[in-house]
Image 1 (cartoon, rainbow, N blue to C red):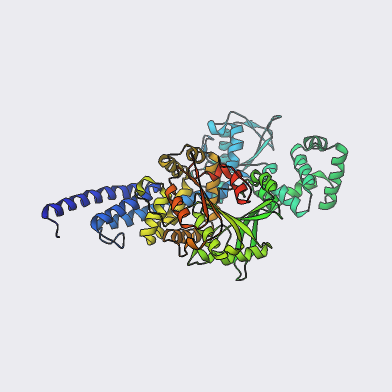
Image 2 (image 1 turned 30 degrees about the vertical axis):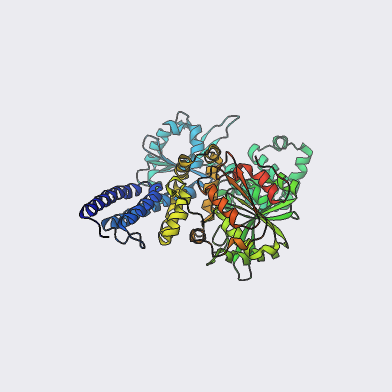
Length: 583
C-alpha cells in the first residue's frame, strides 16, 4: 500500500536529520579514528531508513561522498602518524643519544637514549645547571656557553660530565650548527649533542655471540666493561677472583685479544655497538617461536612451551594472539605445563606473524596445515584449545580431523549462527564481525585494515571504549592492566607486520557463517563462557551447545569475555583432560 504524503514527508525529514548527524560524525571520525565503527553502524541505520539492501553507499547521495572524503582524510592522518612512529622507533633503537638544542642550550628534540643522559644533565627541566668539561682543554662551561663557543669556531667539542658512585660519566660530542646542518639536521638546530655509553650498546652481545662465549663468560665481560676492574666485576657476578681470572683467560683465548683494552676496543668497533643494548628475551632462550616449512614451500610459525615430550594441545588464539602470552611470558605458564606434562602449541594461521599468507576459502582449509605440523612434530593424537574468534578455526579443524582429536575446549567461543536481538548493546568486536561483516563484507574488508592501524596508534583509546561497554568487573580489571595493553599492542603489531590479509580473511569467513555443520562434530567439547560476556553473548554459547552432539557448557558467574587471561591455569588443566574446578 503506497505511503501517504504525510508519511513520505515524515520519512524524508527523519532521513534528512539522520544524514546530517551522520555527516557530522563522519568528519569527527576523520580526526578521531576510534569512531569509525560507530559511523559504519550509523550508516547501516541510514540504509535501513532509505530501504537499500545491497551497496551501503548506493542511495545516500552527499552522505556517501562525505564518507569517502573523510576516510581519505583519516588515511592521510594515520599514514603521517605511522611514519612519525616508525621514524621515532628507528631513532630510539640507536645506542647514540641525539639532542637537538636551541641557541640557549634548551632542548628541542631528543631520542630515548639521550633522555636518560639529559635527566642527569637536567636538560629536560631547562638549561643545564651542571658544568660540562672540555676533554681537550679542561675548561668548564654551561651548555649554552659551549653552544655559542662551538658555533663561533664552527668546530665540534668533546665534552664530559663527571659521574658519581651511582651514575657513570657522560661523554658527549657537541656539533655546531654548520656541521649539524651539513649532516642533515634542521636549520633551527643551534647545536646537536651526541652522547654514547658503550655499556648501553648491543656490541658486547654481538661480540660474545661471534666469539662463542658462554653465558657466564659474557656476564663477566659485561661486568668488567662496566667496572673496568676484574676483582669488582667478579664480586658483582658472585664469582671468586681466581675463577674470574680463569674465565678472562678463556675469553682472551676465544677472541684472540691479549688485553682488556683490546677487548673493549673490539667490542666498540662492532657494527652492533651503534644499536641500543637489548637483553636476551626469555622466549629466545626457550626457543618458543619456531618455523615449519610446508610441502608447498610456505612457512608456518608456531609457539611451543612446555615439555618437548608432553601431551600436545593445539591452541587457536583470538585474532590478536596475546591471551596466553607464550612469547612474552613463557615462564608464567611452564610450571603448570610441567605439572600437567603438557606442551602447548599455538598455531599462527596463514598471514599471521611469520606464517606465509595463503588464500583460503573455508576455515576447513586450515586442516592440511595442522596435519603437516603434527607430522613435523611427530604428533599422532592431540587435544585443542581455542579462545574467542579462534573457535571457528578450531571447530573447523575438529570437523576435518576429529578421528585424531581427543577433546576440544572452547573459551568465550563466537558462533556466527547466533544473531543478537539488540546488537547496539554489545561490544565493538561483535558489531564489526556479526553486523558489518555479515551484511557488508566489502565494507569490513575496506575498514578493518584501517581500524587495526588506528588501534596500534592509540590502543588505550580502544580499550577504554571496550571497558565503557562492559558490565563485567573482571573484564574491566583485565582490560585496564598496563601489561594487557602493552602486550596486546605488541602482539597485534607483530601479527599484522607482514600482511593484514590473513586477519581480514578469517574475520570474513567467521562473519559470513561457517560452511561446515557443527552437528557433525562428535569430539567431546567443553564450552567455558562468562555470563557477562558482551563480545560473544552467553546465548551464543548456549545455542552452540545445543547444536554440538557431545558438548558441555560451564557458565562462569562474574566473568566476561576475557577470563582466559587470568583463569588459564585450570583451563589448561581441562585441555589436558585432567579433573578441573571452575571458579
